[in-house]
Length: 123
Image (cartoon, rainbow, N blue to C red):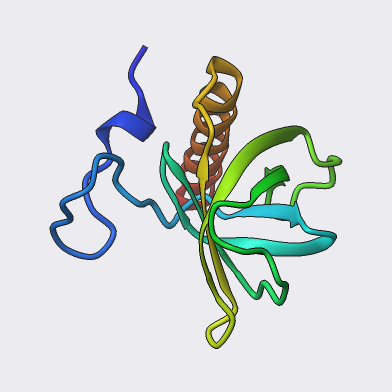
């Protein structure tokens, strides 16, 4: 099985990080009682936009996640830790406690749906 998440290269130029950031697909998350969308994500964590909360660095947080614009309920819960809370830019960065096979499969399904829709719209 080929992996979209393992084969993607760069979002904005070369990066020196273990997990490359990906802009798509966009995920909707529920964090700290707020619904927001991802700015980018990787197999190591998420950058969440429009977050206006008070979580502090190293605080544990549970994130419910789904693929944006799908009618389904939040289908996955992920345990993470806060890496950065930029209250000026309303950005929350979190890293996953661990990348379980279920989380990896969820991201793969998101990629597959995104690219299937893109192919269908070009036909």
